[in-house]
Amino acid sequence: MAYASRILNHSKKLKDVSTLLRREQAASIRYFSSTNRAPLSREDAFSAHLGFSPVERMTKCSTDIVSICFSNTRTTLRSRVGRPRLGNHFSCSMQSVRGFSSGSDLPPHQEIGMPSLSPTMTEAWTSILPLDQNLCPFGNIAKWLKKEGDKVAPGEVLCEVETDKATVEMECMEEGFLAKIVKAEGSKEIQVGEVIAITVEDEEDIGKFKDYTPSSTADASPPKADAAPPKTDAAPPPPKEEKASPPEPKTSKPSPPPTGDRVFASPLARKLAEDNNVSLSSIKGTGPEGRIVKADIEDYLASGGKEATAKQSKVTDSKVPALDYVDIPHSQIRKVTASRLAFSKQTIPHYYLTVDACVDKLMGLRSQLNSFQEASGGKRISVNDLVVKAAALALRKVPQCNSSWTDDYIRQFKNVNINVAVQTENGLYVPVVNDADKKGLSTIGEEVRLLAQKAKENSLKPEDYEGGTFTVSNLGGPFGIKQFCAVVNPPQAAILAVGSAEKRVVPGNGPDEYNFASYMPVTLSCDHRVVDGAIGAEWLKAFKGYIENPESMLL
Image (tube, rainbow, N blue to C red; front, top):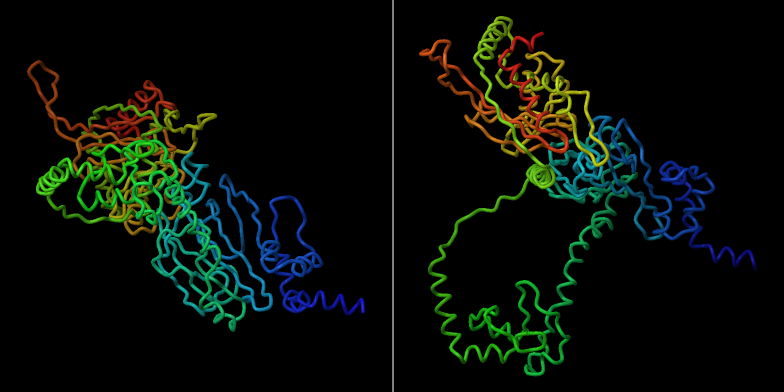
């Protein structure tokens, strides 16, 4: 009888044995830990399945988080499912949970979460910029390359994810079938980790997920609703007390003293004021804690306030014209630009240095070089290419400007990587030319043209815009802007604003002699925490020297 009793007590657990035995190896493989404990053994994996409820089994056997470091970038590995087709020096975070079948539960499946495909989508951004960790923790589904029911294999692209700076392909790393697409094509602002798709191992299990709603998706929205309860705490009593209007304020809970522009009034008083077009701000309440009650509205109307209010509203309405407008939704790049520039102006002590550089010799050298380029079939060299080269060489001569600020130290970079501002229809991009001080003018020109084209096509990869140490913004050549001051691009310490060149009359050698020369104004915006005024002036002197004597850049 003892053996029979044990069998009956464990019957519900034993009916899962056949399924759990097939999955125990997968559970062992996917079991990671943030501590140093060893992986589960085969016996531990089986007991973890058998001794817990379905929810507990998912908690016990689902993927924990283990941190892995590549180079200087922190990478969080959550699962083998899905990885971006990027590079090693890139932060990637993927959430995935394997569910186990139990009785009438769903069959084993994989919940694929929105990956982190950009530094600004995760807290890894703080290693580049000490900014809000929630700067842009969202992604958009640009296009699904697989349909529900399709078979997926490792290395195949599931979908294209639009981040704040680029559109990146997301690969699958496990074989199976795409059972359900949770986030349809075109879905916007999907949080990192939020479930976007479900995969299964067996094709016959696809139909069981037709109406499936993942728990992680359902749990993503409640935080927004948590902000509502404070309003109900300080709100007036429910309208059920309207019948007993005089005692209404006495029976309600005392409201806190009015703060700011908020006006406290009973629901009946608010309704009466709204029906008679009366502004509550013009009435002094006589109820508890200054609350406006029905009697206050009636006294105000009896004293002629209704007529005065009606006349005032008519006059006001006649003076306010109807505005015609359109609301343009924020793009991801616009949100990032707004956050970064607001952070820069609020936390970085800017100062500006301006100098005029004569560009006659620069234009002459450019004409000669372009003649050689045309003869050899190469691309023409622009003034901006020469400016980038001069800025890079000046940074090598004055490395203090090639630095960034941290709370503990000033980091001075040995690489000279120049970001070049590019305006597109989608927003402002700053792709980077790496090691610009070591490259020739033709190479710099080729890279700038390629990066600008990729920016306009919204196809920049993270390696195309990460790692810059200095920025050049040129509004003179393309737009004819004479002079402007740019905002420092954090975490960098300086940015150069280039204006348009113009001819001026300058004194000649003799007392009555005058010559014409072209001068280009440039303004250096500096972070005073890193670059002192004298250092900034020294850098501008070096830059001006390269511009006015361009042959020295070729040495």
